[in-house]
Length: 446
Image: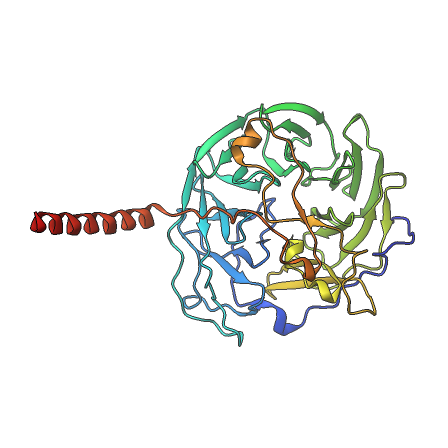
């Protein structure tokens, strides 16, 4: 499988995670679907928990330890189970949750949130029960969500009502609705600039949709012959798209497509005969792809090149006998750069909790390695929701990962902080009390 060539990332490796670095103790939600089961910002990660009320555990990357049910604080507020969640790429403390109750809720994680103490023990605290914003519009359960990669506060959601909706979460308004899907959506991803998004559906079709007009621009009618789930991934600015799925003989495969001509794939790579869906984790900065299969213990690594043969094998990836339930990639801004950590995946397991998998390029020098760390997407949006909706088309703003450049990275306005209705109501009551007091003083003085 795959061709081997000289590469800066050829020898990337991942050691087995140490017990003291894992997050354990929680009983995961039994809800199944096409979601990743875990999502991460640079500071936090989220996993859905078993039980009513749509509970979510929000953990800190720097606070591994043991979750204790009934003691460790959680986030909850939905009337049904949570199916997916998503962190705002421009605000590491904002989490969106999608639920069986047909709603989407936006939450703010307090800056002092610390459910696990520095010694790894559960720390008693107050649960998060009050959402900032509720988005209501889907007729059935909401399955998947993705934040816009360049515009502030734009969110895409797909539902069992066979629609995809775009939201401006700042105004709680629905921007558009795509209604031409014929079946359940299994994946939804934005392109590099966020002008279009792609959906992979249970009808085996991949649709490329103009985000503003909600019209199909292009379509792959039969991405994969098998009946298992299909995943899709834009390969940066190359104009190529990767899909994963199963062949008619149930073998897992990866295909590369050219957006200019979708009649047939440019390349088909056979992987194995396992049954679990392949989830591609693509690092747009380095063109390295991490193929993670549900139910697999191993993670394969390869490098994409925009010419035949397209795939080049890298080292042995990560090998383990512990099956994977879900996986996500930590944003590049949250990595240990000085240890040459190029990617960190969070692996969800049924028995061993959440394991951080650190992929590292071996280097002898302790200095910053600019050749393996090109500029990456920053936490500053390229435009507002209104500007993007009006036709603005921009790639993500980038930043250097060199620690010496920290003072100039992320320069710009701080992310707008949302406030809940209850908080605003409390502030209004305080102001009204103050006004009555001042009016009384004026009356007494007059």
